[in-house]
Amino acid sequence: MKQLQKARKAIDRADTRMAGLFCRRMKTVETIAAYKRENGLPVLDPAREQAMLSGSVTRVPADLSSEYRSFLRHTLSVSRSHQNRMADAATHPDSFLPVFTDNGYYPIFLERGLLGRADAFLSLSRRVLIVTDDGVPDDYVKVFASLCAAPTVVTLPHGESSKSVENWMALSRTMLEHSFTRADCVVALGGGMVGDLAGFAASTFMRGIDFYNIPTTLLAQVDSSIGGKTAVDFGGIKNPVGSFYPPKAVLIDPDLLDTLSPKLFSEGMAEVIKMAVTFDRAFFERLEALILSDRVKDDLPEIIRSALLIKKEVVEQDEHEAHLRRALNFGHTVGHAVEAGTDLLHGECVALGMLVFSAPAVRARLVPLYEKLGLPRTVSLAAAAFAEALPHDKKAGKDKITVIVCDGIGSFAMKDLSPMEILKKAASTFAGKESV
Image 1 (cartoon, rainbow, N blue to C red):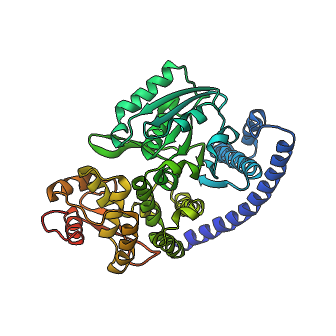
Image 2: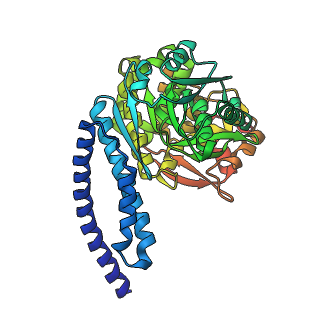
């Protein structure tokens, strides 16, 4: 035991020295990045990186050369990411929000009027597959397509049913027919369904091509646009087939919400409330005041930014949903089951799910907000159908499902419950014994 503790202390000392060297290295990287920016040079210098990798074998013993080369590759990737982030921050200082991943970072640009200037933020001088749906105004699609060198537009029927394996195959076939290569890209211009499907198609075509997300609904802008989750529905189940595939960039233009129906706007607000009630008491109280006084749209860009900052922090700590990111599923366990058996929108179902696992004092704060936004506060669904949907939840273990509960504004906890316990809790919340 003493030997282990001694070894760990030695590693701690080495890590401290490495942290200092890392900071020195990144300062030098910033100098290099500034020079490249001033002289119009690209961030990536393949010859230089290959020379560094080739020379690495002489710096460590032979039995460690492969591990060191892997370490160096990751270091070079971090350096490129840092240079790209500096360039984005310098070029677009007012709209830039970076999201860091295990393999680098991607920028979110949040600003009114971005759609018409998308070519200043995205690399569109190539083949571009634009995936949209028939609920997105034609003007949005035409404006964006006019900025692309070689656009191909695929318009799908709106709604969750379009997020299918068949449409994934259709998008892949379209890219093949139009001679897309690894140098080309996919752009999602629509809501969460479009983003999930288009992102999944990009992640699998040619083993992965560039993907950009331009969400046109409030729900997608504050939730699915950030985090890198892509998926299709399969076997009657929501999102069982998918990948973690971060976009190259996300453009969030609050002006695109001007054409959103009140119903779709309200379902997006349900996701905003979800993040505030579990993570940020001050944000929830600000949101509460805005909703109750009908002033939400007056402060919409800042509301979106606040929601994104919460999700950004969570995703950066837990990119692949090992622990903390599960908190973002607050309301989703019951919500997905309700969604499977009703015609309610996703955000409406999440709103219902939040009521089930909120303490009475929290629920008392939520209900007036739902009333103001026109969100549902109860639902009738056959208990048998509800119970059947629960075991398919992605958070389900062998006999239990991990649910998120909120006992106080700005906090959450995780509990493992059986489907029957969840059913009883939902029935109690919605005041029904045989249905929920």
